[in-house]
Amino acid sequence: MAKVRVHNFSVTLDGFGAGTGQRVEAPFGDGVEGLHDWMFSAMEDGATGVDAERVKQWDVNVGATIMGRNMFGPVRGEWEDESWKGWWGDNPPYHHDVFVLTHHARPSLPMEGGTTFHFTNEPVEKVLERAVEAAGGKDVVVAGGAATIQQYLRAGLIDELNLVVVPILAGAGERLFDNLEGASENYRVAEQVSSPSVTHVRLVRR
Amino acid sequence: MAKVRVHNFSVTLDGFGAGTGQRVEAPFGDGVEGLHDWMFSAMEDGATGVDAERVKQWDVNVGATIMGRNMFGPVRGEWEDESWKGWWGDNPPYHHDVFVLTHHARPSLPMEGGTTFHFTNEPVEKVLERAVEAAGGKDVVVAGGAATIQQYLRAGLIDELNLVVVPILAGAGERLFDNLEGASENYRVAEQVSSPSVTHVRLVRR
Image: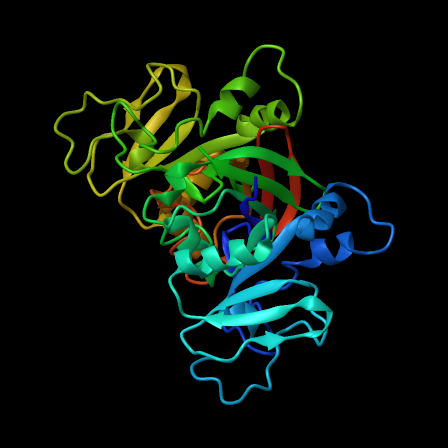
């Protein structure tokens, strides 16, 4: 059965998915340098081990993605124009429909390679419905950031969270496990496995 | 050289060192059931592996301990009498001077086996001076809870933190990495090693 899942979401040891001051030059903000180093290493040719195995799973059987606006770009408030087309270049690695949660409407943006960004301020439940339909039976990934994942956790709509705890300290920023209003009671840790670099933790619904 | 260290301090995956509602029947509060299961397993006769190795280090070369009042007992406010003698029975496992941070004075409490509890509302720097002197060249352990560790981190007085990340979710309680006012910038993760149960992380000063 198709799942709604979070995959390879990296948090610092002190629990932050992003630092402070997110901007073009620092998409994840300050204080989180190295947060995704494990991933880049794991994506290198010939990489093996648990990190490489996990990274490879990131797009397996995924038919649609949902993300917060900060994960699409650094622009805040109204779109001044439509020149910003995401962090991933002309051919983004999604190759399917990507729903971007934003209060600021904008026409859908088809990219090379099959990715289309849709911008929506509909309720998260409605966005998920659209994503499930777009996914055509495959899984839907809630990509991030933390605030977006929190919204879906509070709504009880996430089936599985694959987190990566990275041994760095951010000190400040956007915490993943925050603003959950008790929703974490509905989840348990089903698996924990470490590489020399990071710890992978899989949370599933109780 | 003698160190000031935190050892085997367990936090949940979402970063809590204790849950809500700490009381006699639940010294660590609600929502953290199982937080120390790894430790009890590791203390069993014949236990081996990284958890057992870490647990065994907890009192090696330690000459004095500092703890917050909640770690001494569930009593809040004024001591009604002096009948509460800590969570650990007549012969506590410390066997050295233990300094309990509290605003409410009380005479020092010598126990069997060499442990003496001292109650103090002096500044954390001063308490550490006394503990260092009492330790006679051995290490001083800051045992917890989270608020006490935070005070010593903010004061820049901790040399090394050995934390244990336990794959459970508390949802609420006392976070370790909170109220640090930038102090985490002064620390880096020097080592991370996992057992099948938990992840041990060692933080040291930069």
